[in-house]
Image (cartoon, rainbow, N blue to C red):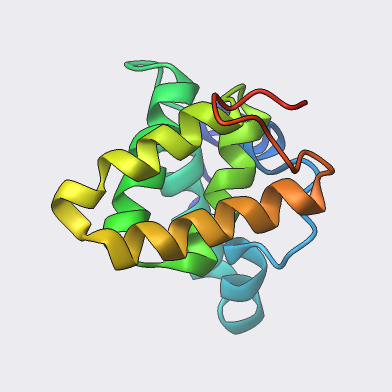
Length: 138
């Protein structure tokens, strides 16, 4: 079995710690690992260590792009994880909400409603709800 490049493994650990600190729900890596440890490692090294660790755009932008894609695709479980990650990397609740609203044009209002419910749920769990209409907590 090949040993992963230490720099990619280190990037994977650092990026996972940044994005997913404080996430209580089962992370995809844990689910993958329960079925196939080797494939879980390979997926994690690629997704977290090579894609999410890229420095071509800021982590905040990367997470807002991810939130918009998951909203349009109506993937609430993954969306919850990435809303938490977006908050962890410095996105404000208002920026996340505005990103979700922007997707109404492409994904429809029902997808936006699902995503806003997920956002509200995450903010409630983190003690950040209610928030002002401009995205700032009262």
